[in-house]
Image 1 (tube, rainbow, N blue to C red):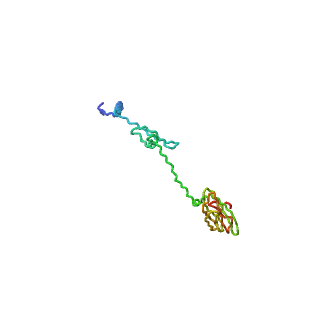
Image 2: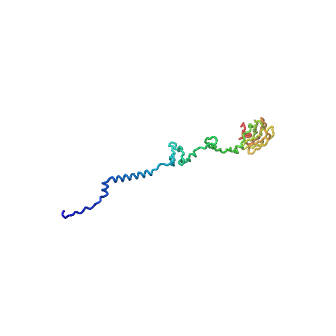
Image 3: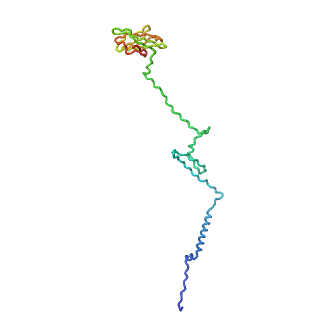
Length: 240
């Protein structure tokens, strides 16, 4: 061209994106290299067990006691195998194990508790009335009126000893409001008597022999011929 010069075109470097786009094998090579490096690191970190390696004992789960739903009481759990360092110590089994006898080997039976001894009972002492009341003597007595007169009468108590031995006796005849004039025994030694208040009390002298009889006679005034009471040594008279 006639006098016109073109300026030379300036050099422009290509961008990295364009290079990568135009050369994809470069990215693939970098990724493969990274994967190889990671694989080598993983293989080097893994180490198998050496000759001195000893495996530890397996862990044993401790069984939990089950509770019976019907009886509402604890059922003892089965004993787990003893593993050194891992087996739990059972303290409740020792308390439930019965003590063995040193001679027979059977569980020792606890001694039975003897029943309580009741306190000794002492009989109640007899009352004074019961102690003083003696059983009647084996004497039979019969009352009768022998003679009556103005202002008084003569009566008799015939006493008979029905026992096997000689007996002394005491006769008592009550005449309320009357007066005892005198009293005596027929054919035997006399005893003693009192007649205060219209009550005749006569105590025999010598004892009456077994099977024998003695008449006690007395003079009474100002009283009825039927006495209010008559007895010999605690036994009532007949004939009233």
